[in-house]
Length: 164
Image (cartoon, rainbow, N blue to C red):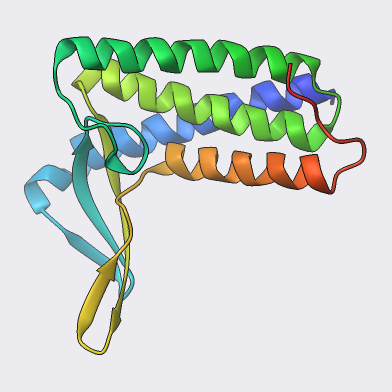
């Protein structure tokens, strides 16, 4: 399989898994109706609507702000797709596919709901105090994994991937 095909496949699998998980949690499992669901002592399913960007930054529900975020996301996806098409390493190309699939998945949420559907909450209790991570989704996991793989490939891969 060529690197480009692997990257496109990674983007498609990421997008399908992300959207399927969100649709199932919203419409079949009815996470909104159930409220927080404890899965393990350190992981809960909770419904959070993120109108901002990563980690809830730039929270703004105005239509202009949402359109601006979609425009930036669209430009980023095009730039990443160009980079992916020019990449020659399998790891970098798959990493870019993960990022693209995650970005498109969260973009679909923004178009469909006006916010990104987040549902996974990691937490830990230390000395009676609970510490929570940000609520996230599968698209976010794919984006983080893609960035980590790009960093690995850039610093330790041979040859290093180059941005366009």
